[in-house]
Length: 429
Image (cartoon, rainbow, N blue to C red; front, side, top):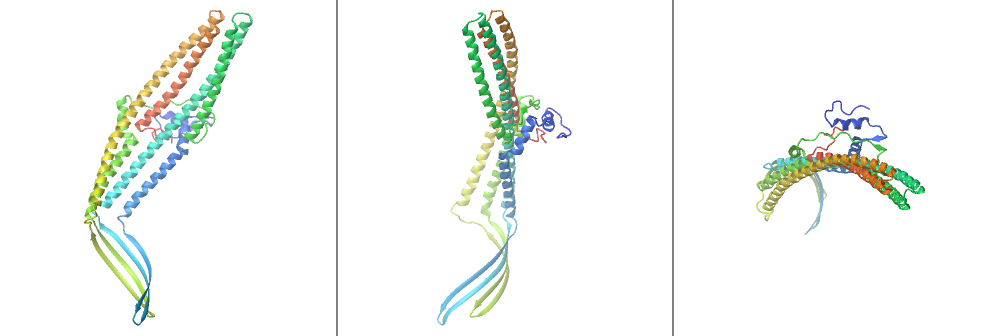
């Protein structure tokens, strides 16, 4: 398979190469992201919303163009008189055209406002794209974690089974009591229960994966690639978010549209200058006679509202209030985005610390388990001591699995908070 891009530099290349070269039996994180992007019904829905917003621009442009109408009319009337009743039948065919010549800038402002709304809708679509991709990352890591947990639990069952057999052998020769055997049997039953629970969690994770990507994972999931490059500091990350976060850019465009609508509302009081033209053909039948009349005419008019019960000032005040609301919303959105970046940065730091701590915990637990097992063979430790040491090692390995998954999710959550979790930025092709 050809690589997706011929030149990819930096840590992001690992993700793109994984998409291009992965075998079907072992899916990569890049494959999951591509599937999520292609199969997302939410993205399709918001693309349709964007297409609808695009048409608002065409509607606004049409307001500055001529309006041509064809008119066909039939009138029948009866007029009583002293000498009898007069029946009249008339037919009219007309072609009329109207054009706004001067609207004092309202039409252009409407076009600009519609364009600003389109840009805002596009940024909203990018936000949806980020949410879709982040959901795919979470689903991918959940399936991997659940699968590794199942393997760990099954290995634990095999190990406890061996411990139980050893305990029974030692019980047969009188080295331990029946209590030690019962403890091992109870631990084995609990371990088997944990395997069943882990398998259930794996099935739940697979269903969530299908909901996020549109397809079940075909088999084993590969280890995620090296995390993409991240800013060196929290301040750098927040600076990127100010420039790239689609939520901020969306409301910036909405503020622009609100400003333009305020200007439009203020200009409504100036009215408009319009021109009209009409060509008509009128046929009238009266007293059995048929008369045909042709007429052509042009008109020029200036319409300006004088009094509408306070409607225009109210609309202007309403537009001003909505503009103020959008501006306040912009400040709030920036604050929330910066907060999200700070939280994502903290979560990433915690995840990294958890990985280091869990690795030290695993090393210590392995040493303790080996020592307790050897001491148990010499009779210095009980079966319960061995099982407790084994449980601590199991807990340490489980913590490492959760910490590694948490680090991956934290990395991509940080990218999303900065506005960089997009197909384009990840070089998914």
